Length: 344
Ligand code: NDP
Image (cartoon, rainbow, N blue to C red; front, side, top):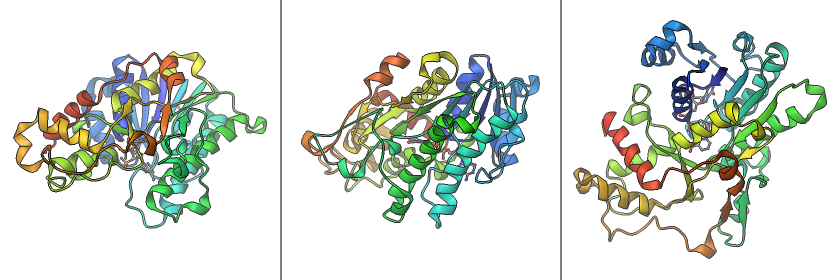
């Protein structure tokens, strides 16, 4: 199958690319710079030489015609749209966060309608951020599921950087569903969204350095660098997590292997976690870092008591995908091993 994967340089997308190529699919992936394109081609020399892997440059996904050229690739059947800002290094939330998320999504959908009639399915990487409602973060009587929607609007983006990021994911996902449900859009493909919470797991070494690790693994780097020695920071609103290899597998299954996934939101979640548990796992498995790590007596980072945190139910997704989620300890051990390879 011929697949278009946007944002191929990303933490999650790198695993999607690896799984697609391992299964023999042919992939066109987009990145912003030639430097990143070259690294990806170098990592897969035989596929790059045979044409099974093509890396294309799309410099700015916030342009309404950003994907017009790449969607003209003949024979595309599936599009996996992962590119979207996930960092807090912006100054203008509307321009640097909301626009690439939302326009990036609508521009690829419009481009497919105009130039890629063979595409039958589009998978958009959304997020738990589009499911969560900030009003219920500490509400033990509330359950988030595939049916839940974040009520956040553009008017809320100045509340906090986290709210702005959640708005970018919510508005982008809404724009995608609105597009495919609008009879006037001309869409002949169906849509699946993948909505992961906090994603941990190994970084792909050819794309990473310790100082530029993806946002959700940053806390593991902080821990290894000794920043949690005196006090373990609060786990935050995301007390649920999933391994990157499972998120990648969900994209591949949803896009290429499970026709019934069409029209579904996939809440890919392995379970609860806390920063305290994360620190203990690293201490148990990597004694070489002991000096820099908190001890068993160090306070902080515990999971809030059951009555003071939301519940989640992603059984529909687990069943549809037939997933056995990778356990937290394995995910963290593999994350740290991968970070050691890039200098931790
Ligand atoms: P990364 O930061 O590693 O990947 C983000 C990707 O999007 C990169 O390829 C990046 O390109 C690209 N990108 C970001 N901003 C732009 C822009 N303005 N124009 C063009 N490309 C851009 O993070 P993840 O892999 O974690 O994120 C991938 C997707 O998964 C995102 O949609 C994110 O919202 C979503 N997600 C991630 C979660 C997590 O915990 N990691 C949880 C839930 C959802 P470049 O390499 O050039 O910066």
